[in-house]
Amino acid sequence: ENLPFFITCLVVLKIIKHYQEEGQGSEVVQGVLLGLVVEDRLEITNCFPFPQHTEDDVDFDEVQYQMEMMRSLRHVNIDHLHVGWYQSTYYGSFVSRALLDSQFSYQHAIEESVVLIYDPIKTAQGSLCLKAYRLTPKLMEICKEKDFSPEALKKACIGYEHMLEEVPIVIKNSHLINVLLLDLQEKSTVADKPELLNLSSSNHLEKSLQLLMDRVDGMSQEIVKYNTYCRNLTKQQQQKQQYLQRRQQENTQRQSRGEPPLPEEDINKMFKPPQAPPRMDTLLIAGQVNNYCQNIKAFTSQNLGKLFMAEALQGHSS
Amino acid sequence: MNQCDWQGATARIPWRPALSFSSSPFVTILHFLYKIMAVHGPFVKIHPVVLASIVDSYERRNEGASRVIGTLLGTADKHSVEVTNCFSVPHNESEDEVAVDMEFAKNMYELHKKVSPSEVIIGWYATGYDITEHSVLIHEYYSREAPNPIHMTVDTALQSNKMNIRAYVSSQMGVPGKTVGVMFTPLTIKYIYYDTERIGVDLLQRTRASPSRTNGLTTDLAQVASAAGHVQEMLSTMLSYIEDVLSGKVMADNSVGRYLMDLVNKVPKITAEDFESMLNSNINDLLMVTYLANLTQAQIALNEKLVVL
Image 1 (tube, rainbow over the protein chains, first blue to last red):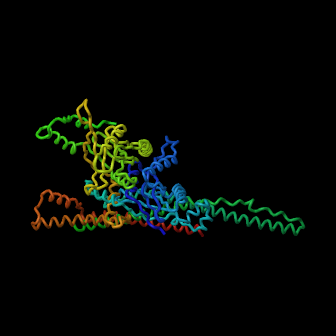
Image 2: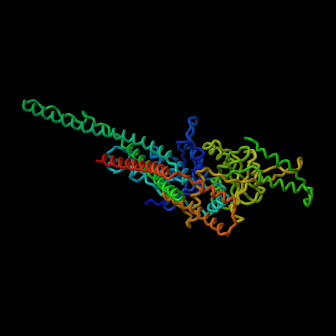
Image 3: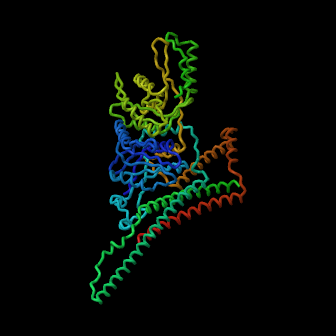
């Protein structure tokens, strides 16, 4: 079902360059992916960046920028089909409502569109970290209905793991690009800096854990909200029961005294049911926490491997 | 925009057509100056994204067009020029005339400026091997857009079995007062990468090895394993060299010996207990974090199930 899709070297380099030049710290940079769909397989052949949102550009029209860019690119024979978008991420935090909404609008138009998440910090640690995600069909249904109440989600059986599905990426280059790469390798005088074998880990771990703690805090708040809602609901049920019982008692008493029974009142109007908290935020937070944990585990496994290698090196020389 | 300083040097060479070229010391001076122009001249630093973009535009050129041209964007300072971006410009070329869509070029530059306001037009590129007369005309147009534009040629037709990438800058030549011509002097090219770019390019290089020109992105431990394998290869090359020297097959080279000594000394000498404690504390940290991560995941999974009840 999840066929890998193709991406060319140009897109990878452009995304890297965009973040490197325009992104600072925890700001995200975004852009649009262009390509085509070949026999239900996606091929991404080009991309262009979105400018950053600044305060003094209030009248900047995003849609107009996109339209103009695509029109110009069409003149030079670049594929102008909007097949997705890309975003950079800070330590893996990207599961948010905004992402969901954007991806939903893209996927609604083109079924195979993806969002590419580029992690510059992980890339700087040694190897390119580019992942592609798509919304699961179940989540698409829910977003279409726009119904995020607990009952709807329960019916659809969506867990946080079923929100986004990862799509494997395959880099495909043309022959001419391969010639170029060969040329670059021969002429390049940049020495090989082995960042991948770097042993330091505490900085990265600290930041990741901090972000994880924030989200877990948010999660516990949501849980407390949900628990109060459940409690209120049960309390209200009890109150309803009590009221009904009293009513019945009164009515039997009146009957015994020969008076007309009190009219039945609409019970629902008297006890308004408490508002169910939206479950979407909880799902998103859970998804994000899951993502953080995955990243942390991957990072620690790499570092454990490196530490064991360092141990072996010491063992031989001592 | 600063005027590049070296422009003065080229303008000082007079060119007298009436001079015979056989034995004049002037010719040697000219050759000498050409040589130093090419070697000590200002650098052009190119990022790989520019070249990839040029090759891609060439692959998508219109039917019948033999080459594509486009604008180069980047930054320039006193000593060098850095090319960081480019876009192709539609143009028509025939035997007698050339037409370039200037509107388009201006428009695209405006759009690009919205994303990266620091990039300016610093020249233009063309695919192909030679500089034709049409190039001179196009270069004149670009001289109006940028002070001292650079002209870059990328030989995508692989005339010499290689993709020759060259950069030129134009300078006036001729006798002042009479017909003035234009000469393109070559510049040295350096490829420069950001760290992340280099890591990306390393991954992209691997597509050359696969027959279907494809490559997937690897998982984490596999990456460490491949980096370790790389180091192992380098070590075995060194070992074979050392054995050759010891058995007398190869002459010993003192400078290489010094490097080897440096290398062996770089492994830090720590007492066994200190190293043990450092290693253990690091491993403990990592294990604890893994445990916490797993615990958190179990917790949210549990919460999920409880809500659905």
